[in-house]
Each structure stands twice: as C-alpha cells, then as structure tokens.
Amino acid sequence: MLIPSHRRPFLQSFVAVCYDCASDRAQTRNGVRQITEQLVAAGNFNVVARKVFQQHGRITAAYTLAESHCFIEAYPDRNIVLVDILACTRFNKRAVRQSLVTMVKPRRIIVRGKRF
Image 1 (cartoon, rainbow, N blue to C red):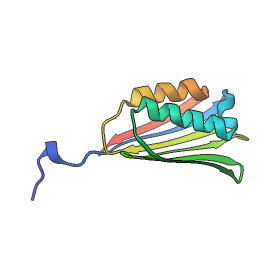
Image 2: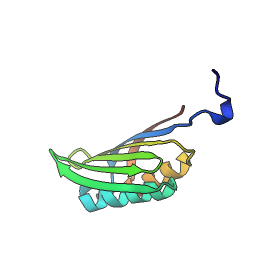
Image 3: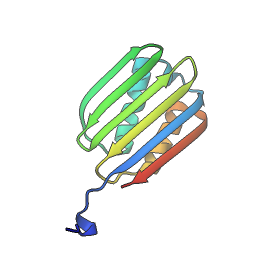
C-alpha cells in the first residue's frame, strides 16, 4: 500500500565536521555542553536527556531529543568538532550551521544534510 506523501515519515539530518577551530569552547566539557545547548536551541528541539563525558582524548555530548538525537564529539588536541543531528521534524539547518560557526569558529567546515 502506498502512503500519501503528506503522511510519510519525515527525517532530516545535519552532519558537520569543523577543522582548525579557533574557539576555546571545544576544549572543555562545559564548553562542549554550551555548544550543544546552542545548537539545540537553534534547531528548536526538545531535550529529553543530556550526557556529556570525556574519555580517550575526546569530549562527547550525547543529547536525546524528543525529535531524535544530537551528538557532538570534540577532539581538543586536533581542534576538530564533529556534529550529528537527526530529527523526525523539519528544522532550520541554516540556523544550526550559523550557531555552530559562531560557537566554534572553524577555519574550514564540511556540512552534509539530507531529507528522507
């Protein structure tokens, strides 16, 4: 049975890799928490659970959203920040990207995003 297009499930993703980040925020757990909170606010998401931890030279923020998830991994020794957001609702990827650039100040950024 075919599902009408207006009733199909909707998924949207945002994946970014930030290189040579000039901001000190990606150097600490609290800074990575601030980055994640800003991206969640920019996407207008609803947070269900938060976890930020540091191990093996990286800082990871794992947020469970009512809409899906937001993960951020920061590698302070390499000045790299990875972002993965998946949502079952539409969100403003431009606002998320702008918040990310403002928060981490990357010299180079690669962004991928898809609608499913």
